[in-house]
Length: 210
Ligand code: GRF
Image (cartoon, rainbow, N blue to C red; front, side, top):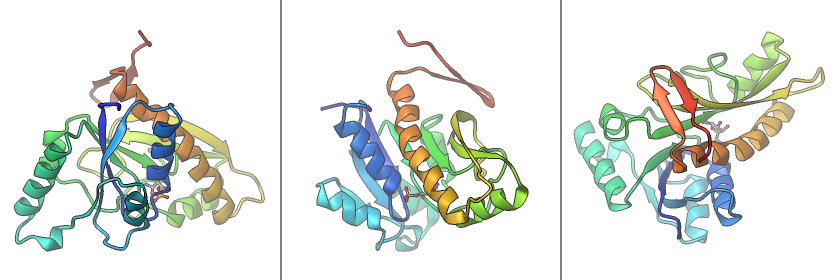
């Protein structure tokens, strides 16, 4: 069994989490999902994870007296599951400083547009694609980036693009982008598994394969 252990944080359906698991099962990603964590007890991702016997845990700050207790609990869990990397997959909460400090350069997120455009607070789900269509850009895509204290701002690890067609709607665009996310996220995670990612300030360099 691969040793590189991912903690996937998700708030909703979790199709990216499922795509990561499929990449693992088909030998495209040499890692394992150690735990799935959601702030939403009704998240589809938790129900799905249970169907394949992955540890699936609901944890949210409102279960704790203080934010510090919440973070300490998360840190203990991450350590119990021997987490090497945190992967955000549609996680709608901000990541707190204690986690950022405990996992420097090891918290990844995927955003459904080409950052630094169409990101930031409130830019999630259909809002992103509405803004893309309203702007008239001819390309959109996905961005895998490291997480810092601001929404959608951390160093960019990988991007992939798709055309925006004249007849695209929010629905058609979000389907195209989501399918691209499913292909891109495992590739980006594998770079970390292979130790190929070098972070220099805002820039990420990818070392050649050994
Ligand atoms: C994806 O579009 C991702 O880019 C964004 O949240 C969405 C999650 O979708 N961060 P899913 O829950 O993985 O299906």
